[in-house]
Length: 224
Image (cartoon, rainbow, N blue to C red; front, side):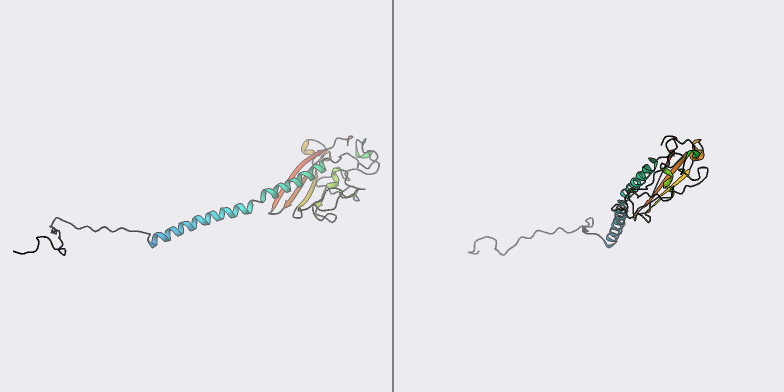
């Protein structure tokens, strides 16, 4: 019999009994995968590269074409202005400088100058009539429709796009050019061939811009 109290030593640990694994018990070890494999990373990079290339291509096309509408509108404005200017000119048998211009009912009534030196001709008209007239002159300007036949801008008198009676090129229009074609085309309207003129104005600009406008001017002789 011992004099020491009956208690467990502080250094004594109780160990749970281990249950032996029977033949029907299977030990399973779970493996948790984190991150991506190299193959998945490569596939992701390829997909993102293709998508980014597509987006950049769209942005490139948008940026390249964003100025086109403005260029076309400017070319259209030049063509409309020039066509209107031509159509508002007199179209009679005689040149407006002729004394009988307001009363002539045929070219034989003209005293000095007909508006078209070859009214019975076909094809294009090459003006001006007389050839001393100029669109930019304040004393001897273009004064009839046929004067504009074969007219171009820029030319020797105007280094760009200019207003009538002014040889100073308009700002920011140096990349544009205009050409006028006038054709005797009365037959298309059931008239004498020289009774109506077809006026075509062609304007070119940056980015291969081309605008062509056409209109008719019919003779209302003897009225100017």
